[in-house]
Length: 241
Image (tube, rainbow, N blue to C red; front, side, top):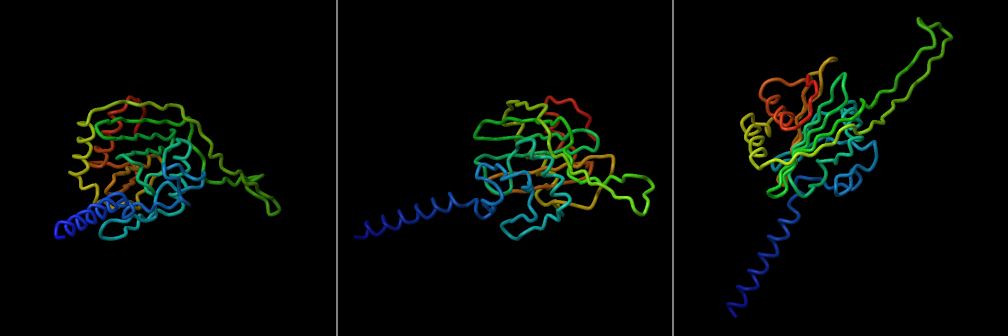
C-alpha cells in the first residue's frame, strides 16, 4: 500500500512538472490570437510588431513606444515577412536586429539557434515603406479658398535580398556574452533620442525564458558594438549610420 501511494505521488509530480514546462512560456508570452498566429505571422499589415509592455518574472515593463513609433517600425517590418516575436514563443531562440535608415531601405538581421543549429538570415527591402500621409497644397503660398489633397502612404515594398548563412554555436555565444556584459536585459526598452539623418536600431531577444527589446536612435558605444556583431556576421555591404 505504501509503495502504491508513493507511485501515485510520483506520477502526480511528474505530470504536474510536465504541464508546467509545456505552458511555461505563457508566463512571459501573451499568446493573444488577435495579435498574431502561433507561428508569429501577423494578422495583417496593421499588426504591431512590438509590444507596449513586456512581462517579466517580477513586473510589467512599459516599453514607452507610442503609436507613431509602433506604426513606423511595423510598417517597415511587415514587407520583410518576418514573424512577430513578442506574442508566442516560436520554438527556438532568436535575436533580431532591425535597422531603419533615413535614406536607405530597411535591413533585418536575424540570428537563430535551434538545438545545435545556428544561422543568420539577412533581409533587405528595395525601398523605404511610407507610413505617414502627405498633405499636398495646390498652390504655395496657399490662398484662402485653396483646397489641399492628401496622398496616402504606399506601404508596399519588395524583398531585394534574403540570404542565409550557417554559423557555429560560438557565434551565438559571442553575442550572448556581449549582451550580458552590457547588461542588455536591464536596459530601458526605449528613450527619447531622435534625429533626421541617422537610423533607428531595434534589437530584440526571443528566448523560451524571456522576451526583450531595446531601440535607440543611431546608437553608439557598447550597444552599437553588440548590434554591429550581427552586421559583421552577415555578407551585406551597406552603409550603416
